[in-house]
Length: 182
Ligand SMILES: Cc1cc2nc3c(=O)[nH]c(=O)nc-3n(C[C@H](O)[C@H](O)[C@H](O)COP(=O)(O)O)c2cc1C
Image 1 (cartoon, rainbow, N blue to C red):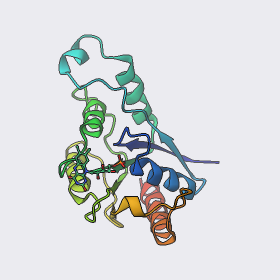
Image 2 (cartoon, protein in one colour):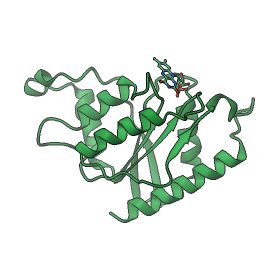
Image 3 (tube, rainbow, N blue to C red):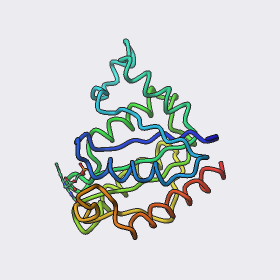
């Protein structure tokens, strides 16, 4: 029986996204004490503060309440031009508002960046960490997770190479320990 609900945000909308594949692997590797729920972020219209003063879109309200209900936050991000993809930044901005009602605050977080380059999305990983300081999300520091050369990590039938799987297991177990500290 899961006792911690973890909201998962994946910063790629691509059908064959490597970030989605890695997130799915982590879901399989997580202990039964963590319930990972993948949140839809592709349907969130661009943040516009006027909408918060008028009539916020239903998708924003639903998304914010799912974040509020979560005990922790797990981010999976590609790197776009050395930074976060806009779809993920938009989701973070929406969750952080309206002013004074930041639904992210205080939730233990962690990030995995997944890229086809050898750098493993380092820029996006730290770009995300920068925003997490301001929105008051305590981020797990270690292990850091920069998954590079993502296109070479999965076999034709979709199996992940063993050393990456072992690393992801250590990552999600460390994250469980991190969440339990809060
Ligand atoms: C607009 C755009 C910008 C990109 N910029 C970077 C980058 O700065 N660094 C990098 O490692 N990969 C970059 N890439 C390649 C992504 O790592 C690659 O598309 C990856 O597969 C995206 O993750 P996904 O498979 O989860 O969609 C970029 C891709 C796009 C579409």
